[in-house]
Length: 349
Image 1 (cartoon, rainbow, N blue to C red):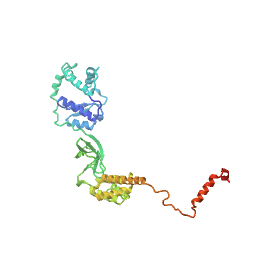
Image 2 (spheres, rainbow, N blue to C red):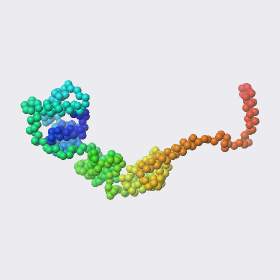
Image 3 (cartoon, rainbow, N blue to C red):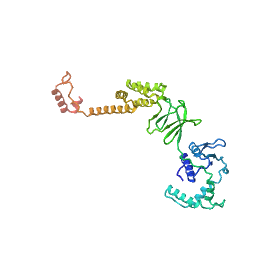
Image 4 (cartoon, one colour):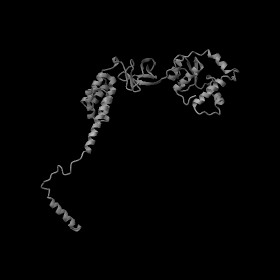
């Protein structure tokens, strides 16, 4: 038993059942559960791709039950009611694992040895007669995957988990089906599901899995657009972006987007200076340009803070001391004395 179901959980439960029985059946009748059947249909039902791949791996043929036709499903669901009313009724467990351990013991020591009510025979004996009809299990377990659609970018790659994978012969702009396994990536045709490319899954985000001979170096409209934005930043930014495109082709446009996007956070002049320094260092990468830009910003802020902490000149420094309008101190002193001795009425007059 499990807490919640899903397309992979549903497939794993079937796989565990077949391995418990020691072989797989040849034919299964499916209820129209979403984990197994995506679109119920009398003539062409659509199975869940993960579950369909699991059935194909074990060479099992699926036959989804007709909607609103319970007679096609047999009496298999009676076992669930029997288990709930016999094994689980009135019992509480501390964990799901404890419950499953109890059910496994109950199944092998009581349920399998009981006499079936309708058949009047031992359940285990009937199963042993049918065991010979089970198919042998494959040596390798099912490799599960998650599936999604991707668009082929103008560098002939698809983006999966922040990495790029070659998708040829799929044309640029087309939709493809991508299956992500634990250690590999499969790119398939969206309509026929024919395998187009298979790659080892990249361990590090930002990896480009694309042979050098498949890289596209002729500029696209997107390339011209990025280079115009780089030219607006400055001459060094434009030169660095052109160098990156010449080295990596269209697949390097992600770095170009990163460089021109720095102006959203930092001044254009500092980004351009950072590009100039990156060219001088011989390190042509977005990460290096970003680090240089951040350092230039930190240096500028430190210089401003230092200027604020320096002692300021005295008030009289740099001021004119002699001017026709400037009177002698005695005149100002006499004026202040008169104002202090006079009454408010005299001030008014």
